[in-house]
Length: 264
Ligand SMILES: [Zn+2]
Ligand SMILES: [Zn+2]
Ligand SMILES: [Zn+2]
Ligand SMILES: [Zn+2]
Image (cartoon, rainbow, N blue to C red; front, top):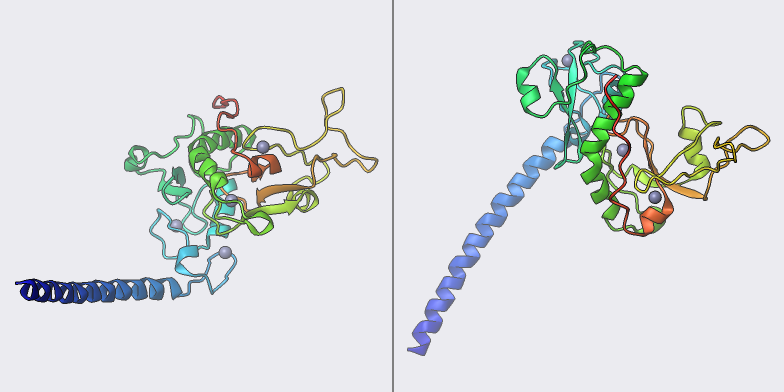
């Protein structure tokens, strides 16, 4: 009796082994297929880099065949939201699962249903973002990005090398850097006055008149030695991201939100 049971058990486990092996085989074939797809090189229509991998190619809503690397496409979308090749007007949403901007067609009614940020009346699709429009767009986008942003900060901080995938979708581009390095990336290094996007704290000194204090060369005086930042220009963070060292070492303040800017 006992032997028969043992035999049956052995048979069952042998069957299980076979099923397991089959699943593993299918899984590795899928993986291989995925790797092959990711290995296929593309050429970016802007920087002409001809060695970009599939996961670095942007998914655009227009039908034109040109490929773009995420870096070039994002930078282009920050100023003129239209396809650089076919000039189609591009709209935006935020994909919180992938943690990056989502691009939609402005003319497609479905896009609105898919969550596209509808820009205020008076804005002609495809035209350049001017200052008030940028502010409105930046505000709306950062509200959508915020949950992913907080999640990104909560991921394990491994110190100097703790770079991580940013909310713009860039791989390991959110990292610790010196204040001066960050200043060098700024559009106006002299007047660079960052504040922490998590807690809202200023990362520069202000005088009694409320204006930023400057040194004898006219440069703003920054607080602290390091900041965490992403250097990419992306529609997910038009002006970049800055997070103070305090917020990186502690639980970030989740209550902070910037004033809602009214459409221009
Ligand atoms: Zn490129
Ligand atoms: Zn196009
Ligand atoms: Zn980024
Ligand atoms: Zn902070």
